[in-house]
Amino acid sequence: AVNAQAYTVGQDVVFGARQEFRAGDK
Image 1: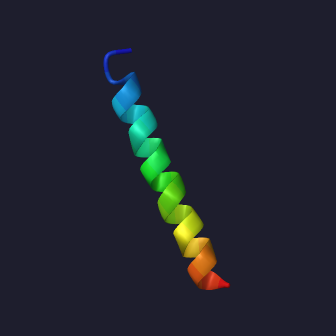
Image 2: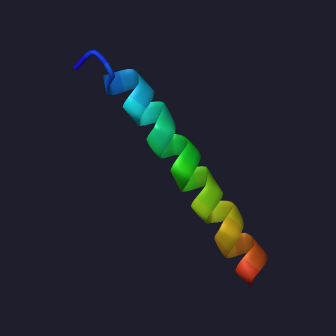
């Protein structure tokens, strides 16, 4: 649980990158 917040932030970064990738793919 020590890295829970860092993991969440990492997931948000990955999600944001995927959203940008999808937007660029359209």
